[in-house]
Image (cartoon, helix red, strand yellow):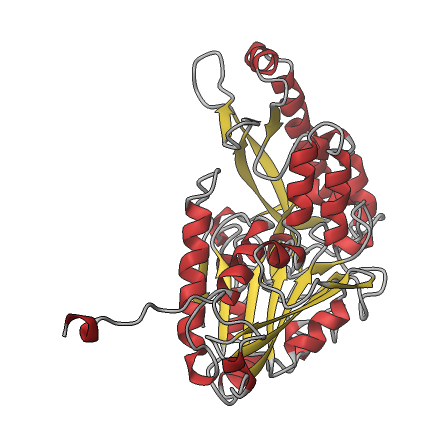
Length: 446
């Protein structure tokens, strides 16, 4: 009797493969997962990083290559055959999970027009990994250097630049514009940026009370003061002592490293504001300031843990300095890159994951209240959208994909929701327990 009461052990995902006879007669759902890699997040960027580490740390370089998508799936034995490289950053892989009753096809793309194509595919699960561009939207391109690909793009209606899905006005650091060297349009003092319309001003940026009007000269002078303050911090005794103790340490701040400052000229702001009036130097634009602190970032090469040393004044207080922001025209519909915006997209994909930085604060309201999403919710079957709550890293897509593929229960048809729930729980657990103990989380909204 005791033997009869025993339950058979639950089969793991690896126990059933496409070669198992049990798979031959089963009906499988065909599921397409599209990984859209944005600017600086492409596989070739990871390969370039690995090549730079080849001589200094060959093991770390090999790990970078093994962690690329979809190559990481082969490492976990989650592919039926080795991934295929089609060139131009396009990779494909296939995997059959008999426990889920699903045949997966994973595609990696890097072009903006392909990203929009799959957003309109009812069978696709679309995952974007890349920069959020301060909430303006996903950003695509091959050239990681300065240029128009960081804003409108050289081919705005085709394959590079922003895919806009932001609020009408979005605050961006002056340093972002002069470092990446792109043309943009700023909000003039006559623009109604303090209205009460729902999708007018990004709440992740400035409050309406903190907004002020500045001339371009005032913004340039504020940026000069910021860069002088950073340079003085590099000459401080505390930094030199820390640098002597930890040679790999480097100054960091809320926007990036000091490399962003060394090649940035504040006076360049004049030539990158497209709608400025040279004949009227006193013309004002909306902006605001945020205080930032300068930190020393140090990564222990043995443990992989990242530590920060906060720079303090001689009185023992945390040293801070205001960083100037300028309000730019952004929007999600009828933009300068139409039809490459969310308003001109017939959204039909089953799942959409926006894995940029802090997209839960910057983009989910756009996807919640726009007519595009109201129509999307009425499509056949439940639709799912996922966002992030903090700074995004390249490994979150890998965690998401691996956890989805290794789920060992049915996920076809109406069972998809519980598979996604498992995926998000395991992904967040992996991020929390990683070497950096990240606060970054993936959350579901809509």
